[in-house]
Amino acid sequence: MSTARKRILVVDDAATVRMYHRSILEGAGYAVIEAVNGIEALEKALTEPFDLYLVDVNMPKQDGYAFLRELRKQNIPQAPAIMISTESEVHDRSEAYVAGANLYLVKPIKPQELLAHCRLMLGLLAQPT
Amino acid sequence: MSDITISEEDFRKFREFFYRKTGIQFDDNKRYFVDKRLVDRIEATSSDTFRSYFTMLRFQVTGEELQALTNAMTVNETYFFREDYQFKCLVDSMLPEITKRKKSGDTLRVWSIPSSSGEEPYSIALSLMEYWPGIADWDVELISSDIDTDVLHRARAGLYSQRSVQHVPKDLLQRHFKKTADGNWQISDDLRSTVEFTRVNLTDANDIRPYRGFDVIFCRNLLIYFDDLSRQKAAEVFFDALNPGGFVCLGHSESMSRITSLFKVRKFPQAIVYQKPESR
Amino acid sequence: MALVRRQRTDEVEQDGRKRRRDYTGLVASLEDANPTARRWAARDLAGCTEAAPALIGRLEREPDAAVREAIIVSLTQIGDAVTVQGLVKCLRSDDAALRNEAIEAMGHLPDTVAPVMAGLLADPEADVRIFAVNVLESLRHRDVEQWLIEVISEDAHINVCATAVDLLGEVGTAAAVEPLEALKRRFPDEPYIEFAADLALRRIREG
Image (cartoon, rainbow over all chains, first blue to last red; front, top):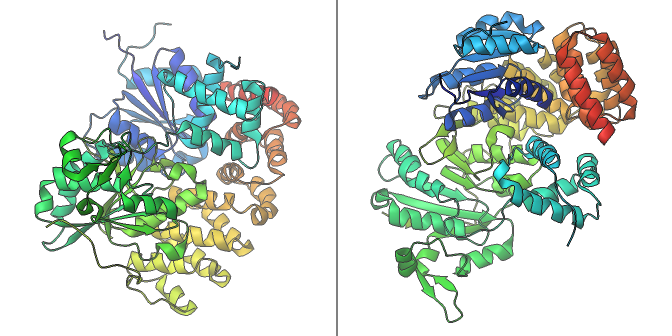
């Protein structure tokens, strides 16, 4: 099993949300990089490798759907993407999958839920309880 | 000497705040760089501690100290072939793409702003003349602008210090510069003639009007000094100044991500640049 | 072929459009088939107060991002009540890009947005309330903290409160401390609320 830390890109315009996800993910041993919107996220994705993307829907300058669509067009190694949204936007679920998301979660997300879904996306075995 | 120290926690807080405000991120290996400048600003503002300085910084309505701090944290020095990976990108990646779309006889147009004392536009000229095979087949017009007329005057004169030319390859230095009696370097008349210098205020709609039809724009380390609204307006100016498919290059720590979504992010081997969409 | 200089250019380049264009002509150009023409029309209508309804009407239907951006900039320079009304309509759009542009524009118009803010924060749609809080992020107005405190004290929807808490960390004062503690009690099983509220409290106390 690889000992290299898995790298997760957390994309959200709210600093507190990024910090929250960071604290959960770093606590579980992942390497976390942040981006404030879809444009910054794309720049990072083009220059560094990632194992997973955690993407908020509503961001200024470039929203989560636009980012994913752009990301999936790029000729780089692709990684799974978890899209995160507020409950009222549930009708956008299918749009998320069409844009290239692998999973759609509703915030706020509890720590164990986030970790379980990340493990799932990263292809890791379930934690023994 | 002061006994103000920056703790790990202070650095972390500062780094997060600065990233939020400017988009500029500092690695842990930049501690020395950051700490030194922080201490300078703390002393300059007569704050006693990092904590009181940081409070002042966050809540100051005018944003004056944030601007002073940003100025201190960004490297202002200019010299020939600064961030030269972008010139390599111009020659190896951007121009080949652009010329594919052009008809023979078309002139390519490059805009460098701010010109400052001229090191950047002359570096572009040198890169084109010396490293771009395409210069044999295409005419290129190079325009460089600044709001400061004194600096434009110096740029047109083309006299530079040893420090400014230290990254110029020896053979280029020999071919295009002459050493003066007092140890400075004067560029040749030929090189001087390759750049047209103009005075422009990027935020003045009348100044900007004639600037159209460019293929590449270099605007490095200028927008970080603007406020949000001015940055957006400047990005609009660049958008309108470019031909469809044209490119904008910002400074290496700058990004369009906090400014506008009008441009497409393009990654070339040497650099990330921004492209105006092709079909309109 | 080489690096060339054009003859000394003091003259202004032809930019392909008439220098003086009249108001009716510009409004008509907002509907031009060519997006560049629409963009220039929007730009030239900047600060032209009577154009607000036409600009807003175009904004709601405009597919081109560059044209929308020019419209928004011009609207921001007009910035009157009619403009704000139009931007509020955009908050309800299905188009995420348009919504975000409207939020940003409203953030620049504190005097004309303030009178409608209370209404937006009480909107029956949670999303609209969230977007209203997003507007507060860039709004320079002395009531911002008070509005945020009202949201975290009264709003039933967790994500509306979550958005407000984030901002309170930046602009909050001692007045926000008790409401933040109360918020944690109101949502006892929500780790994110606890995290965000504690962060805001820490920031307020350190400041």
